[in-house]
Image (cartoon, rainbow, N blue to C red):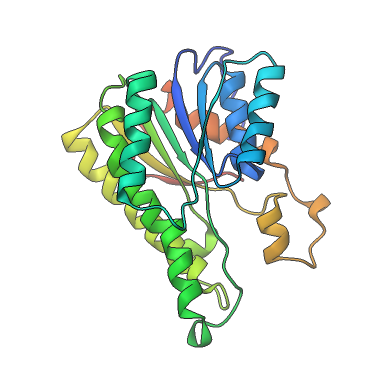
Length: 247
């Protein structure tokens, strides 16, 4: 799967939502999914960034994308239900979701971690994923083969000092993925759920976490796209409940 060669029309006529689509891995995944035929719904906080990705997809001649601006930090249950209703009215169903949006928070000891920031990180990294997935399940049930991809981290499996709320949120993400995978396998067997740990990748979040690191020594988001394509497409139909390293 790490050297996966996707067929040119792997995602033809598929509708896929990507969160955090304005930058980094989310942006690259959205453009990659569009390249392979998907109509991509770009969800993110900054409209200007989403519009730039939209324009790039259009200029490349890929299927026209859609934009949903949303600040996950301030969103409530009704916002996610409204998103689901919009997608239902526009497309009728949904074939895939990439939960990519995350907030790093601060690199600080848990004993002195700012509780307000802790709650903010958990809202963006955990609660938003729960509420969005809950709202979208009826649309995913209408797909012949739907895939939900969560974004994990190495510190979401083995906590390391000073990773604070981010590590806690990624442990929660791993649990959420496993719960959805197991429960949906019974109630909605057409939906599978897995997680990807991108590992060290050349993104702005990585630079913020490791300011002393030379980004040129890291893989780019483009380098890890084979796994993102594999897990969203039909060749991974038997993969469910797995947390996989992209590198």
